[in-house]
Structure formats: C-alpha cells, structure tokens
Image (tube, rainbow, N blue to C red):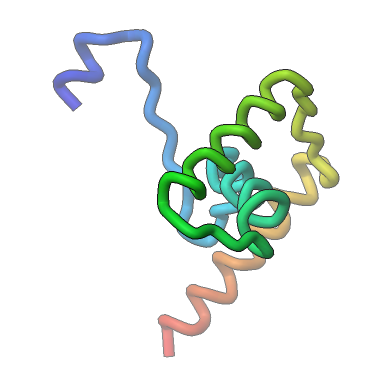
Length: 92
C-alpha cells in the first residue's frame, strides 16, 4: 500500500472471487482457449507458444471490443443475490 501511495497512476480495484467474469484478462484467456488452443494438437511447447502468439497478433490487428450484455443494475443485482446466498450458507 505504501508503494501505491507514492504512485498515483496505480489504482487498485477489488474483484470479488465470485465475480471473475469481470476480469477482462480472464475473459481473453477464455477466448484464446476456445478459439486457438482447445482442439489443437501441439507437438511442442514452442508450437503452442507460436500458436498463441499468432492468435494475439491477429487479435491486435483486428480488434473487437468487449461488449457487456447486461446493464450495471442487472450485474449489481446478481452480485447482491450471490452475497445473500453466501451469508445464508455461512450463518447456519
């Protein structure tokens, strides 16, 4: 935290464990897995790394923005429902 206080360009954000879908890096890893890795057959780590690199190069050359399919109110309702369920389970 002391480092963050010295560097105002860094902002930490808490992402609840149950909301990993908020994490764009995780979303991107999911896309790479589905579109480049899952059904592939790789004879070496070098070949796998090259395939991932080629996918990322193509993605960067043809960027597609992430689009939320739910509005903020719907997302917050879902988070609150999950918190309520979790508290009910831990209270008993």
